[in-house]
Length: 142
Image (cartoon, rainbow, N blue to C red; front, side):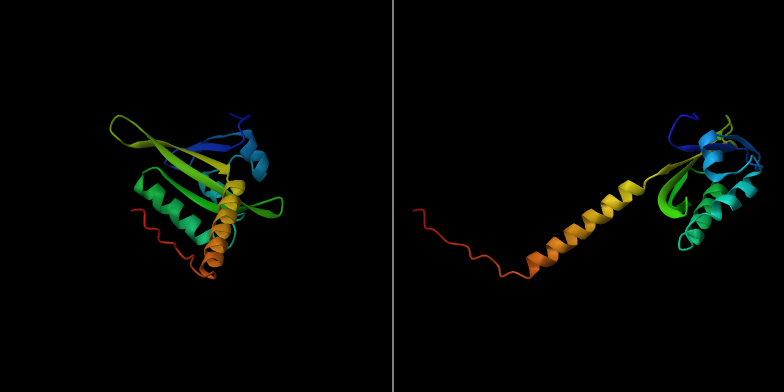
């Protein structure tokens, strides 16, 4: 899992981190710690405009106990890049969450491509509104 170009971690419901792949530790420069400490360190790298939504989504998702995800910007080498984080619970036979699995992937290129496409579509719509409508020729085919 260390070879995958994603960040992976898992932790118990009590906050004990059970696994963090090497790419995640290296990217964040963090040693293993409790989930609260880990979350605080990650939160410090989140774009200020995304912090509250990021915190709220994760807090509510963990409380609800269902799979969830959030898209946000995180500082990478001094620049902000879009990331998507997803969380999935592992449950025992009684349905009790016994472990959480999380992953984070870089989606910056996808987000920027979508933004460029949306801008191009908006520009095309504006340009087409500025032209006179084409005249339709009516031809009698009988």
